[in-house]
Structures are given as structure tokens and as C-alpha cells.
Amino acid sequence: MRGGSTHHPEDDGEAPVREVVLKIHERCNIACDHCYMYEAADQGWRHRPVRMADEVVDRVAFRLAEHALRHHLPTVRVIFHGGEPLLAGAPALERAMRSFRAAMPSGCRVTFAVQTNGILLDEQFLELFRRWDVGVGVSLDGDRRANDRHRRYGSGRSSFDAAVAGIGALRRPANRGIYAGLLCTVDLRNDPLRTFGALLSHEPPAIDFLLPHGNWEHPPPGVEVAAGAARPTPYAEWLIPVFDRWYDARPPQTMIRMFESIISLSLGGPSLTDTLGLDPAAAIVVESDGSFEGHDALKTAGGDGGATGLSVADHSIDDVVRHVAVAGARHGLAGLGPECRRCPVVRVCGGGLFAHRYAPGDGFTRASVFSADLRRLIEHVQIRIEADLRAARSGAGE
Image (cartoon, rainbow, N blue to C red):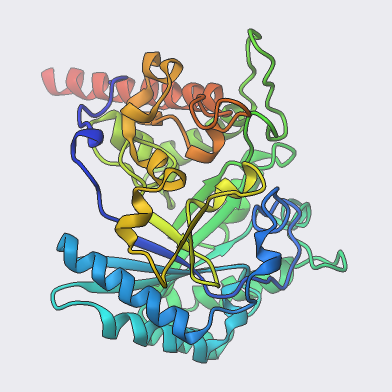
């Protein structure tokens, strides 16, 4: 059980990219103080265009189609991101979708998703997203008190009511098919079960719990990084009660990708998220100026973040996946240091998110700054699974 999958992605050669995160608008209408885009060390957004130009969108579409053709991909996905992508406006989003769909080679289907704070979700956007079958994810950190810790307007005013109104529109019967779920950044000051209950009240088909971004130079709140010390596991202790409440519900009230990935990987299956497991990261980022970057979380790892120096004007996606800022997250077990290789849950944890391994002088060779939390959580989940499997075998033998 603890070994997880025996698959070695590092033996598969160059794995294709299947998702492009498109920074179609690089400003936001709220000022979250935990945002990796604006509050991290990488301040490159200040020097890039506010909105991606149409000709850049077309060039990204060409590069993705080129990549899909070379690797015989049956499907690819484009995720509209930001900033706040809805600030680009419905006409710009529809034009972008037309460009991508027109560019794809025969036999390759392109799908679309958008990650938004929900504030601008009105009938114009909803009609567009229904027509194009765009999955809409909304960022919300729990109830009003939890959400107001970070997700406020620049004036300090709460954004909660506007976000909930947008989610309410997605919950209407006409829009349930495009409601993809909620993304919640964990804050240790928020009660985990109260937060989970608040999220469930919005009937999300899925919840993504996001660990706050940090690394060994800039550790996240509550994480001790002193060498040789027995490290506490505050994020595991926050997530474990949520897992138990979710796991014990019959039927499950929602999908939680982190938990389902741990279960799947522990049983030898695939991961549903790039934050766990050893499979190569499936996505790359294209900024509003057409520059290629690695995972957004790399913005927390220094002034250059995940910058590659490559752009859609002159470079292919295959060029990007070979760049050190991207390739390191795609090397599976071979890309991990000795501490991770010795860990009994490495094939489930996968070393954690690439950006969370950063340490000055060591680059990305360390274990995740959340490694103790991840191991504690994974082992708890595996104990629950093992107990249920034993009970099932015992019942079948009666």
C-alpha cells in the first residue's frame, strides 16, 4: 500500500503537455494578500501587457496545435487564468476559443476552463460558457470570516457577497453543467470543519484545497524549517478532520481531488492533480506577452520565478518542456533528492509541488517544505484505506 504505483514516468521519455494556462488578463479586481501573482517575489506582471493581444492568442493556438499534431494528442485543454480572466471581457474570451478550436488538427478536441473569483459572473459570461461548455472554477476560502482574511478589494472591503452571488448563479439548474467547483487556500486560523461545511453549502461538484505557497527560504505560515528538529504537521492536522468527514460520508458529498489522488495513487492508480504523484506536470503557462513560464507557484521562488526566456513567437512547446524551469517538474523519481527517494510514500507524494522544494543554494533538490505534512496526511489516508480493505476481505470470507 505505502509504495503506491510501480509506474516510472521518468522511463517514458518526453511526455507531452496537455494543458495551457493562458494569462489572458494580468490584472485583478480584488487584492488578495496571499496571491502568488502579485504578492510573491516575481513581480514580472508589472512589465507585461494588461491583456493578451489577439495575435498572441493566435500564436499560442498555433503552438498548441503544433504540439498536439506532433504527439498525436486526442484532447488538449486551455485554462483561462489571470489575474482575473473575466476582466478580458466576453468577446475576447470567445474570440480566443474560436482561435484555438480553428487551429486544432483533425482528431484533436480542445476543451476550455476558467478560474475566476466569481465577482463578474453575469448572464453574458454564463451564456458564453454554456455555449462553449467551459468549466468554471471559483476561488473561495470558506465562510465570510475565512474568505475576508485574504480575499478583499484593494480598499479593504469584503468581496464575499459578490463571489457568493457568482457561485449562486452557477448553482442554477441551467448552469450546473459548467460549474466545475471551488478552490480553497488553506489558512490554519480557519476551523477546518467549519470551512468544509461552508464550502459544501455551495453544492460544489469538486473542491480543491490549495496549500499556501512557500518554500525553504520563505516558509508558509506555521511550518517549522529548523534543521534536525522534529517538525510539526499543522497542515496535515487541518486536513485530516476534513478527510475523515468527507471519507465517512455515504455517498460522498463532493469530489476532493487531493484526497481522491492520494487514494488512487496508494492503490496504484493515477493522480488527479499535479501536486501529487510522479507523473510529469501536464500544463505550462503562457503570460500575456506570449512568454512561456513554468508553474505559477514558481513565482514564489525568487525574482525570476518560472521564467524560461522562451516565447510563442520563436519557440515550440517541445522547446519549453526541455527548459530547466519546466523540465525539473517532469523528471519523476529521477528528479528527486535522496531524502524523498528514501521516503515510504514517495510514489504518492511525488516530492510535492515543484515550487515548494526550493531552497537557496540547493535549487529544487530538497523535499517539499510541506513534506512532513504530506507524509502525515498520506499515511493517515492509507491507514483508513487499509482498515476498510481488511474489513471487506473479512466480510467476504464469512
